[in-house]
Image (tube, rainbow, N blue to C red; front, side, top):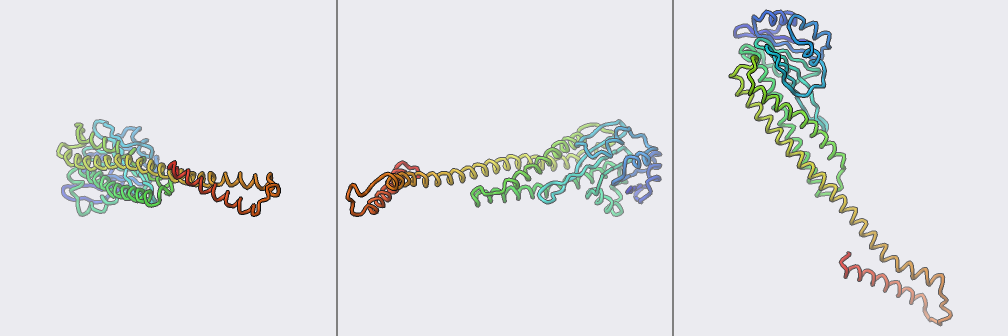
Length: 317
């Protein structure tokens, strides 16, 4: 699907892709062209009238790029990622952006809440495109940065739940929950860090497509993303502590089990020796014992009590 908007004076209207490309090539108005799920051939055919580097067109349809910004003089190629938390793991979606003084071209493989929100508010807020593509870019980046804050809250809640479960259940926590959260957090950190640096580059460098009055707004988005990045770094340390605590408590539980089994085996060893010796190798008739079974029972009880007393005195219990 291809959606396009053209801004004239103080109003915007939705237009066809061919008209939007012609307008952008002529440079007579501000244009936004949004591709969703289009293949490589469709993107190249639609943008044939615009001088865009072949490597940019190739990278736009590949969903393997890390966040970055490439300067091609008259336009910038920017890669950013949106995120959402689904079923204990993050879902990351790439958004490719080509921005110039007059045009903004976006490509996403699937739905994007930021682009959908921009389409929804465009009729009510035409200034997003009328003032220039950089203002629309800021809106998209601002919405995407806001998506990371609820994720940070959810990750913090998951870590708190795991900590409580470790202490409550004595380490009897499914380690797969911890590892799943750890992998999800690592995936987020691999994206948020470079994306933060990408926004920082937009606020510092003298790009033709980014007017100077937009840099404070982009710096505000960078500050929020930097805060999220710091939170994810702290979550990594907290999760590593939870995992270490889980392993330690699981090891302690195993030691307690082994300790109890050792006590049982230690107490039972003399009993086994006594019963084996008197049961197989001893003739009571030769010693004229009136009650041999009581003697053996008393010996067994004395051996068990004596072993327990010795273990207690040595502080092994």
